[in-house]
Image (cartoon, rainbow over all chains, first blue to last red; front, side):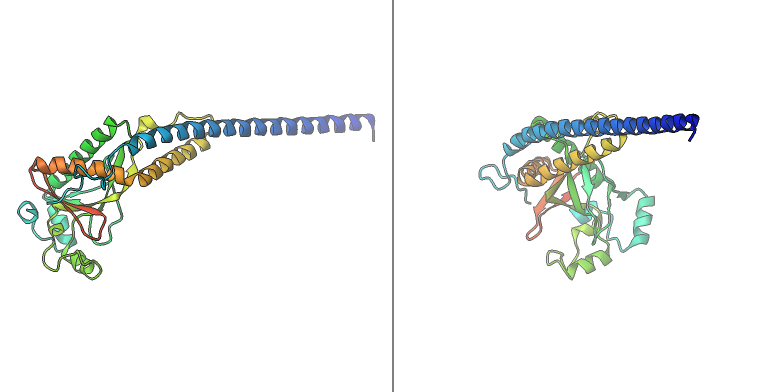
Length: 73
Length: 194
């Protein structure tokens, strides 16, 4: 193996290794970003649902006594 | 009432097409106010007055929901116009289906399921987009499912709200309402011009 061949081989390996490192880094950033968005989404949704559930649970049920909320002819 | 305000008994598809052409029937589709459940024994057509009543009912329901700072839930319609054939088929499985003439046969009457509500996601309620296009629709779908589940959990409260709107409309002479026995539906007939 000549010196030039060896240099080319090493350079090629460096390029491949750098490409793979960049790929895995980008993939890691994407997954981390998605996880962060999902976590924020879940927290905000849970908070909104809790607030809505509290508001909705204050409504009178149809089965409650008092005002008749079941219309009939 | 249904007969007086209706289109006369509708035998089948040919009658429906004729009435649609004369604008005496209108086709129903999902709106921001209501969702159409799949109909096995009826078809989604009503008179223009009945369709206008549905819109008014939806507007009033949404006003009440907004007063309580609640999501804009849509009510669910389970039955619309019944042709003669529909009515005969239904009579075999449902004792509520009268052996004579049903008010559903005139296009003025429909059934609203009172234990199902669908979340009506408004465009402005949609989540801000993330940098990940595939994630946007997925999160939005989860949000809609979560609100649908909330509506299912609190259906009795929503039924109470819908029931009070129907009582108001009945007191205004715009609708006649019957709570059907053995079926979780409000059976409603338009009672006024719109």
